[in-house]
Length: 428
Image (cartoon, rainbow, N blue to C red):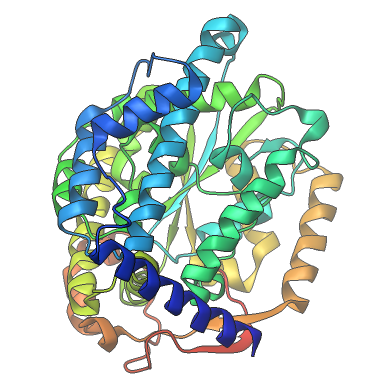
């Protein structure tokens, strides 16, 4: 009942703000020059630093203004998001100048988890994050990275409450989102949020319909973006060190070559799942997230776009893998991960030639017990809701399925988009 009341109140707020925008009372400006100027006034700082991509910022805001069909509240949220990232960036550049020790931080043998969306990457990330030898960026650190976090206040920093409020707004805008992807201020989060601060990130197409930005991103070398990614890790590591960074995002498939150019000693774990199942689930995710900010969402367009772009991502990934015949990759199949999580973990550690400590194994077992007990809203979706035919998708992705021996899964054909039930959460 409370959820329904909150949804009704949010719809009323959206209509009210649209009404104010229609009469000129509320006009959220999405102009890059004005937002940069405002961020500079707010922080008293000028230098946006190396790696800032003006083209990315401009295409993002043009897309939000012209293509994304944002309602007034969505435009206000986009504006605030961009302004926050600009302010974060100005402060981090200044802190790097004031504290040269940040730039001296070594990022040693980071471990990246990637794979098709909804292929077990989040589950595996949070399982491996139980090892105290691993350091994963928490959501609050990526939302508010300045000043550099301290290890002694990693769970008590005031920014945690601020991040909780920000995440709360997302859940109000998109009530179904919590059933698709769990987000919490202290939970490990996808590190592509770090790349949002240079405005070269797959994070933005997941949130908004911005086709011109997507085309630009898909053709781009990501070396500069990963150099910025490294600067963020150095920033977060300075006062909160750990032996190895544990990082995760499906969108790393677009930039495996850039990862190795930036982190030559990196290791990549690539998860594998039936594309017909993964893409239907991801299309539902994108539809839900776009619907948080926009009046007009076309699930069929999203389904077609999701299929084409992740085909491109896998093609780029296979090209990058072909350039590194010596290794650096660990392959994990979704069905094996779900069936035997700890067996999968042990195999990963053997391939990494790292010891799995008794402390780490006990923490992982505890995490798995909690996961098996937890009951959460189940994500309902179907391929047909997004114009995705499983047989056609498997044919389209045959180059990938055959390369890695990916097993077929049952794919729901019809459901009511956004339906939410209850049941055990699966690895996502």
